[in-house]
Length: 233
Image (tube, rainbow, N blue to C red; front, side):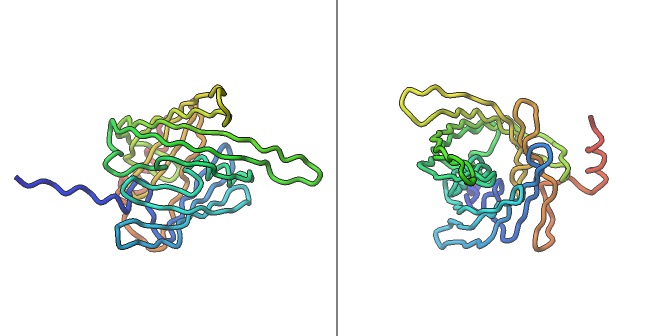
């Protein structure tokens, strides 16, 4: 009996750390968010390290990326910390546990994982203004609901649909948390293509730029398919 080899955890197809890969999103109603991967360095032990550059509303920053057997981690504790930082908030990560995107073996229908992020936030500096420090913890539970074909402005993809339950609470004993449900769609060799909360789209993929032309197996064939899908209600 031949046993199929377990896919290597890195590179992780659900968070590709590809040199020069740039993903452009519409964030909120009209802002443009660009995530660019650079300085990718594979290690002999199979891990991969890189830098994720973030640009949003004319602001820019960057965070470390690490892919290992547990998944992909970011220096800012995942998407939440990255977006907070790019919004202009000063973000100090107090503690981050769990992967932002787990290993491929978990990213299957029925797969579940948890991660948490504790941060201290300060609003942007303004002349003469106060800058209170807000200590917050985000606890997230994610479940892979299944596969789904989905159309966004950047194309039509076969994607994994993920349900997140995120609880935000003040970082002090006894504080009550507030939970929120969101949905995310991940396409292989691309990553996040859409994020919604309460039916409202918070993030939508607009385009994928790669330094070298390559076939994207996640996308369905041709521009005709893309246009046809885009006309559906």
